[in-house]
Every structure is written in C-alpha cells, then in structure tokens.
Amino acid sequence: MNFSTKMALACTTALLGTAAAAETMTIGITQNNVGVDSYQTTYEKAFIAAAAANPNVETVVLDAGGDVARQIAQMEDLIQQEVDAIIIWPTNGEAVIPAVRKAHQADIPVVVTNSNIAEQGFDFVKSFSGPDNITQGARSAEIMCDKFKEMGIEDEAQIVQISGQPGYTTAIERAKGFEDRLPEVCPNVTLMETQPGDWNREKSQQVMEAFLVKYDDIDGVYAGDDNMGVGALNAAKAAGRDGIIFVGATNFAVGYEAMAAGDYWGSIYQSPVDDAEAALQTAIDILEGKELPFLNYFDTPKITQDNMGEFDKPVF
Amino acid sequence: MAQLTRKDLTGFLARQGILVAFALFMIGFALANQRFLDVDNVFGVIRSSAILGIMALGVTFVVIGGNLDLSVGSMMSFSTIVVLDLHDKLGPTLAIPAMFALTMGLGAFIGFLVGYLKLNSLIVTLGMLSAIHGLTLTWSGGKNMDIADKEGTWFSVFGQGSVAGIPVPILMFAGLAVVLSLLLTKTPFGRKVYAVGGNGTAATFSGVPRARVVFQTYLISSFCVAMAGLMQASRSLGSQNTVGQGMELEVLAAVILGGASLLGGSGTIFKTVIGVLILGFIQNGLLLVGLEFYVQYVVTWVIIILAVWLDIAAKRGRLWSPIA
Image (cartoon, rainbow over all chains, first blue to last red):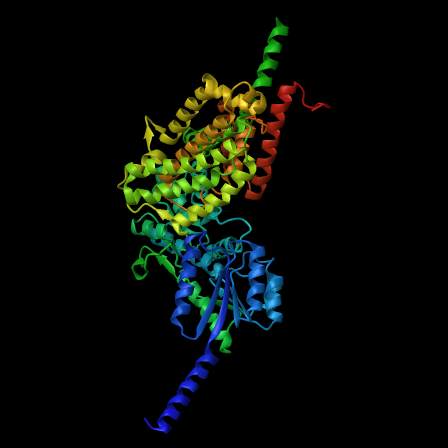
C-alpha cells in the first residue's frame, strides 16, 4: 500500500465520518403513559425499532407516566441536552404548552404525536403527526351506512352510540365526525342516544345493557373504540339480541377476532406502528427541511368483515 | 295503642332509613320508566353490581375494623389480569387457585403492615393502589389480556352462567353476603371486628388480639377482591389493565351509603348490600331515563347526599338538628 492510497483511504474515512456526523440527528421523545395500554406499549416498541433501523437517527426515549409535571421536566431535560427535535405525546393538551414554547424559543422543532395540544400552542409546534379522528368518525358512519344499505334497512335503522371518555379530544372528534357524516350518507337512520363508555369495556357493557332494556329495536351500535364495541357486543350476546351491526374505531385484537367470528361488522384500522413511524418520519422530514402540512395525518383505513384479510391482526 | 304503633314506625325508620330511601328511589325510577322494574333489567343491574358488591362486602369488614382499603380497585385489576393470563398458561383449574393465592398474598401483606406494624391504613392502601397497578402492568407488559379460546372454556360460568334462570354472579354475591353476614354477626370473630373498630385500646385490654383481627379483615377483603376479579375476568374473558381503576371510591361510597362509620365499629353486611344496590340502580335508572352524562354525574351525587341525609334524619327523628 503506497502513500497516496493510504492518504486517499484516510480522506475517504474522514469524509465518510463527517458526512455521517452531519446527518446524524438526535430526536427526543416524551410519551404520555407507556405500559398503561397496549397501544402505547406497541407504539414505543415500534418507535425504537424504526429509529434503530435508521443509522442517521439517534433517539432519547422518555415516558411521562401520565404525569404532566414529569413531562414538563422531561421537555426541559431534552432542551438542556440540545436534541435536534422533540416529539411529544401530550399528557395534557393545555398544561404542556409552556414547555413546548420553551423548546420553540430554544429553536428546537417540536412535533406533537397522536393527540394534538390545544390550539393556543399551535404557534410553537412545527407539525402534528397522528390520526385524523374526525375522518375516522366519518368513515365509521360510512361503514355503518353501507352495511345498512346492503341489508336494505337504510330508511328505518335505529342506532345508539357509545362514546369515549368525556373531555377527551379523541372522543369528541370521533363522535363529531360520526354524527356529521351519518345524516349525509344515511339521512333516515336515527341516532337514538349517545352515552359515554369511558374507553372501558365493562362500562360500555353496562351502558349497552341499559340500551337493550330501553330500546326494543336497535339495528346498529357505534362505539368510539373496539374495546367498548366488544363490551357492547358482549351485552347483546348475553341478552340474546342478534343481528345488531357493531362498528367501532381503533381496531383492537378483540375487535378483529369478533369480526373474524362474524359478530362484529367493522372498524377503523389504526396501527400504533404506523403512528410511531409517522411521528419519527415527520421529525426527520422537518430536520431535512422538507415542507409538511401542519396537520400531518397518517392514513387510517376502513376495515370490515369483507376486507379484513388485507390487514394483520392488531397486536394490542 | 296508636302511640305504640307510631313508636314502632319511628324505630323502624331510625334503623332502616337507608332502606326507605332505596325504596323511594326505586319507586321514582319505576314511574319515570316502566321498563325499570322488568325482571331482565333488575337481574342485569344486580349482575353488574355484583362485582362492585362483592368487593364492598370485604371492605365492610375492613371499615368496621376501623381501617380503610383504597387498594381494592387496583387489586381487582391485578386478579383479573392474572387469572386471564394463567388461564391460557395453566388451564382454569390451576389458574383460579393460583390467582386467589397471589391476591390474598397482597391482602396479607397489607394486613401485616396495617395490623402488626400499625401503619396508617390510608397511607398503606393508597400506596398499594399504585404499587399493585405497577405490578399488574409489569405482569401484562401493558397489553390487554384475552383468553384465546373464548368459546371452548368453562371458565365463563362465573360471569355469564346461570342456575335456574338466576345469573351466577347474583348467586355468588348473595351467597357470599349471607356467609359473611353470618361471620360478622354470629361468630366471636365478628364481634372482635366490631370491638377492634369501636375502641381498639379497650379491645386490646380485653384480650382481643387486635393486630390479628385487623390482619384477618384485610385477608377477607382480598379474598372478596379475588372473587370479584374472577367474576370480571369470566364476564368478558378479556380485560384492560385498568378495569378496576377508580372502583375503590365507588366501593367505599357503597359501604358508607350503607351506614358503616368511617371511624369503625359500626355497619352491617345487609346495609352494604343496600348501598351497592342503590349505586347500581341509580346508574341504570339514570341511563334509562336518558339524561345526558354530565347531568348524570350531578344527579348521582344529589341522590347519594339525599340518601345519606334521609338515613341521618331517620336516626335523629327529624330532618334537621342544631346539634349534630
């Protein structure tokens, strides 16, 4: 090996080194409450896996454990560490705004993931990456309406709604999307009553039991997520009321299984893996200077008994 | 003669004020919605209340013994998740006793801290509420726990079965209520629980083993929680980690509504059952009437306050009193 080759090698190595260093970005994430449910648990795993698959990305993965104060402290830590971008899954849409503002003032771009923060904080956020809950609600309405048309009962069907926890943006938006879209596609379907099931299968089962007593004729149930949808399904099964069309959102493994068994009609496929990967990609795109829409939604397609073969069973 | 009848009536009211309040609410709801008293609905409500109810039976012992148990909701989540997980790993026959052993192990630990080490029960059980929640999440890795083969297991009998047309949860709730009521009223142990809660120092000087009695009340409480968890798991054959979250306060509300004193020394199983039923029927009645949920929160609270007030007023013999 002569001198010039050595030189060339050294230069290449150095060049490669600098190139790699220039492209390596450190992205910090503070999550809401990992481990409290399967969705968030899977999200974290997918996020770490996606980051590991990208050699240019280093991550600092934190979890606020559902605690606002801890999340604010974690934001401050990430600012101190001078990470290149921060992803936040807000524990609370209002309380985290000052911390987000601090990051913005330190010139660190902030991406909000999964659930957006309150509107007065939008100025300090580069992009929101997450599901579009209004569209999800609207799509659920379409799934239900299409099924009623197929059954030929779109002019007389009566339905009830079991919504998520009162006060949660996701719950409010899904209900709104559903309630706005339903009269557009199926103007003669009556939504008789809405009650919250608090994202809880057991609570939803109790609500449905009361609905079944109160209404002799229920053709469809829209639940704010599959967990509640399956709770309602259990109530109907126990009461021996067949033929009710159940439509949910956030397809859970239990919902998928109930669909496979033919008991549950459809849902919205929202993958925590897509959610995590979209958040990471959004942060990377921002650091690479790409133009992104402020509301950077990832797609959450319709899933029904007819097309469920195209989807893997959710892991949560 | 008339005098005597009136006295009897007042005496009855004073003792059973909460029962009268319960009857009044039932009549009110029945008038508002005629479906309310349908057999199906009544069975449905009692079956739904059975889980909360069984937990309340156990907590009644703890409260009469002069302590609190805020860990029951979190412990119920634990037993539900554990029994569901073990069901697929060990089979139901082994999973059930294993879950009972683990849950009662937690109860024994709390009983040891509160009974023998004399730590404040509020602090201990509040701490255990979080600690057990952490344990549950560790066990499940945060995932929902579901039984794989939902059709082919006899495990569903505890939550979904029925005997002679009566749902099994109701039978279990009623059976346990009778057994625990006998334990509380007809055995030396029961009297010791009242003695320890009424005046712990006096009980000690009378030779009642205070620490052991308190320990045993927590053991009973955790046994009831395990029963509730079994029923919960069997009812839906799958569960979130947070299934029992917040139930400790509902349980306590039912026990207090039944007239047990938070200071210990008083309360009965029968009245706790009434307290449980009041909560269950209020929730169901308001749903049937169809009020918006935010109105329901307020109305639930108003009804509870009314019930407690009626109970107190009946004891006093008048609606209002300048001295307590």
